Image (tube, rainbow, N blue to C red):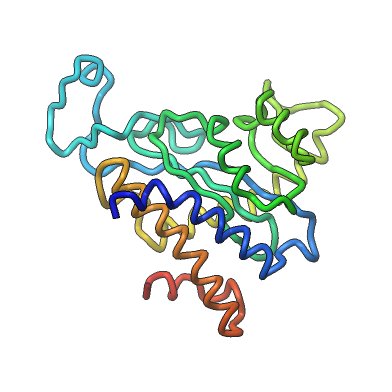
Length: 236
């Protein structure tokens, strides 16, 4: 169990590739994968910056392995980030997942996620956090096209903006509802249930693996894959 949190990203990646092979999610759609991160608040109190700099922990409830992060939607929060890669298709398949403290930049985890994704994926959809020279170069070497929103003030007026809007809509209908499904089923909207990076990784990444296993179970038993996921997750 102590070693399992470190192994979970590789297990999720391997099962994600197998599910793509079995379920063929891109038969009727473009072979796209969406990247995103989801903020998760730490259990207990918050460790304010002035106390952290002094190494002073004012309360035992504070998870000192978590960190401060800023979400465009949620603002500043103290906790973690779940980094995900999910199929852009009618069937949501988590293909890669990693958990980090909240201060880890999304773009820093993107290549590690993409290394776990099936080589069938040709389009990588993300927001402006993923539009970095390193990720662009990685996608080019691996025959993938990165489609990410540009930086700078809105509205953008370059020649590719209309195409990106379509891809952004497709992305928002896959990875964002998948993130919300996990938080809803496992009641993570307020905070995660445990403290420390190893235990939080075990709980959160195991939930992603469990979702994959349910898809595999449905496929093996001839069920309608992707339907009735919530009650199965709650029962598990």
